[in-house]
Length: 213
Figure: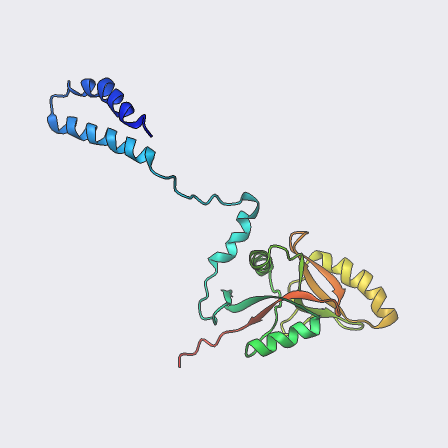
């Protein structure tokens, strides 16, 4: 810091004579002020600048979904409210939690690819260690895919046919076991069938009441 006065003096000797040639004294004074303002700013403490993590930049999209008509801690998207629950539970236990924490709540259903992406982003944003989580989908012998909230299975992701119909079909034909649907983050939100007694995190959803009080 002792060299700072010398630096100002040196720059004054080198730069100020060049400014003397200006015919307009206002321009001259403005240039001098700009010079010293720049020097003073260079001595101030650097500001903390947050650089986005490129690896997670796509996951931050979940922040774009506001709370809207949803209760605190829930995200609004496509007319539904969503909450990621980090505490792990069985599929049936997770469904019970969803019904308890929100009136009309259930494990989330998936009706289109955009909703699938939203759920992946939400889970990744809330818990970066999560690799898979429960949805409300399940399949049992003699039935098609069903959702706990009663939604129709009008959106079927392609891997489901090989997982549920092949492996799940063999298991169900022998043991009549229910297979429950998870979303896997490690494979870009692909669906997977899983033992319903396994304990996983999960996402609840409910439809908000938009009727004014």
